[in-house]
Image (cartoon, rainbow, N blue to C red; front, side, top):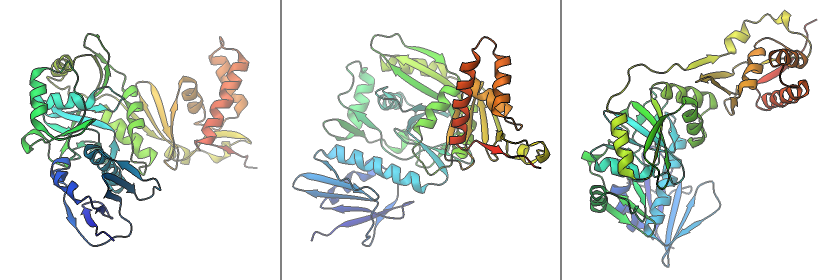
Length: 398
């Protein structure tokens, strides 16, 4: 039976097991610089196992039955980084982990939430070529206590081939820093002078959504904070964090940052726009309302509760951004986005109220809408509230 190498990474309880694939360790200083790891004893439950046999890498992770197979060295390393990042996110109780790239511009982080084929990784590399410090490519830890961005310490990965519109300066920089190259991906080796040190914390200056379209003139537009908010909720992959903490952390981070969208074709044009937009940072944060209803509900007069009345559940957290509201269930497991009608119903249920009373009030408030439509919408929303444990039915006190 072939011997295995067990590597214990700081922050992970169980090791990485390498069997016949020990040669991959020569790339580790490039892939995750400053992440300490050490060889150790045998472990029956490695977090990740990689076995190399007859030209094929076999990768398996704890908790999953499926074994993935790779023949390209860059592909197996890419899978390894993704699995290490995921394992680290579940062990890191101090941060919310998001799919996003980030660079430092004018002393603050500019964060690019992940969107399919939007070019965030390539744009990030080109910004580094322009002299901006690299922070992260696909993983963005957001510290729960300070709401600052933390450098994850992973090397940037680029999809090959490079765009034909790549300017010469960026092309020379990228080609001179490629350390690992496969058929589909390449990893860059960035020295300490080009990157933020692992686990360093920096203020977030902006969240930037990227939209890449052929032939479009580069343009920038300001986005409602709620658009970024919903995008980041979808990009969270640390499922161990409670919904209430996700909401409060993201809302605070967004309140301190600009929210914009860049539409572009050529990366050099996008960089020019980013430099112009973030030449200075505003000092006043946006107004984000964060309100817990638990205290209000505790002070309600129980004598006012009537039979079959509906009311807000205790422990529900509400956050309002740019006129749109988000709720999290008392157990922190569900996040609910309120539309205009839903928000109105929620406010009505701050006091005990029957379904018929809610419908009647809404019919008066929106006389142009057919009453039957209001009844159907109200029933649907209330059912959703119940499903997410946001409201309860209160019985009379005789």
